[in-house]
Image 1 (tube, rainbow, N blue to C red):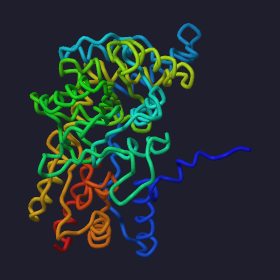
Image 2 (image 1 turned 90 degrees about the vertical axis):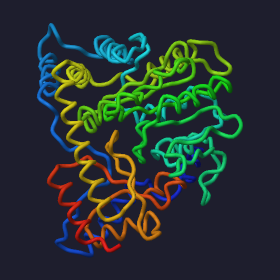
Image 3 (image 1 turned 135 degrees about the vertical axis):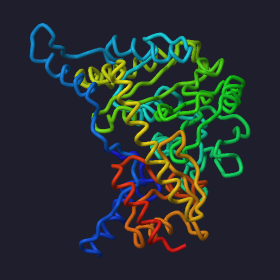
Amino acid sequence: MARINQNYDKLAAGYLFPEIARRTNAFLGSNQGAEVLRLGIGDTTEPIVPAVLKGLHNGVDSLGVAETYSGYGPSEGVTPLREALAREYGALGLSLSADEFFVSDGAKSDSANIQSIFSQDCVVAVQDPAYPVYVDSNVIYGRTGDATDSGYDGLVYMPCTEENGFFPPLPDGKVDLIYLCSPNNPTGAVATKDQLKSFVDYALEHKAIIFFDSAYSAFITDPELPRSIYEVEGADKCSIEFNSFSKTAGFTGVRLAWTIVPKACEAEDGSAGKLHSLWTRRQNTFFNGASNVVQAGGLAALSSDGKAQTAQQVSFYLENARIINEGLQSLGITTYGGGNAPYVWMKAPGGLTSWGFFDKLLNECHVVGTPGSGFGPAGEGFFRLSAFGHRENVERAVASIKSKLAI
């Protein structure tokens, strides 16, 4: 008899973003002709830059000539791209070999799939609030109990609060797998080197593994803040890092990312190199590699022209974040993030709940954002606004909030 994976039934309510879409559509259905301005889901909006577009075109053109046609590529990614990624980390003073980089179609999927090389009884700790895939994928893998008002039983939540600057405390007791994200989605907080070192020291002591999501590292403008966890000594022995071309090069729909599994990274019951070989086997078994065309675009994004042009786009989004921050602050609303990240994390005014403020913002200002509680229990009472958007739309949304929000 075929039986379902009942862990799916543990997932609390709907996935965050479909629930936002449901409420937004219900509002539009009851308000014919209304226009909604979206500062919600973190999807890029600006066109792919010319240097990267040229690389994508070259990738397509090469498939039309027998001498340059390519079929299946290596599951781990083409060598030139892996070497280019290694050089990027080399510019940070890090020594990582090209074969420690695994190219994929998304950091989101990798951060979920990486769990398959660890035992099911691993105790998992997550920043709270956190990007939903960290939690939901562990629920599906069977590493949690049922959902409660304070989160899922069996999952260790590390609360990120105003008091701790939205960087979590170390777990109480021993955990096995730790999810960290910097710059953080949703709070926009960026970890300092000392803060990351505290987790690296913990992981080395307890033989834990850190899953470090650095997908927004290109938005860090402060040179004192680390862009990779490997800038902390010893992190290569206990950390797996995820990054992506999605937000840097506008590849949210194009799909290209990478995961770093250092050969020095060591599990509690496995010697150095074991995790690297297991992830290699996993990718070779379940994955045929990212699109050859897209990898050509990724290589172009790492060229001198590509980096210069994508950096301008990153600056564009950061300016959007500044506009959002200043508009909210002019109303006396407390905000965080935005300076080194594309997200503004705001405190819901008047003691409103996160979903209560979502409905208020939608109905009064026709603006959609993301309720903080959708990212975890510690997100209650907060709200995320995204800087990804056309400048005109961002300015109109902020103007609408400033003129119509009753607080």
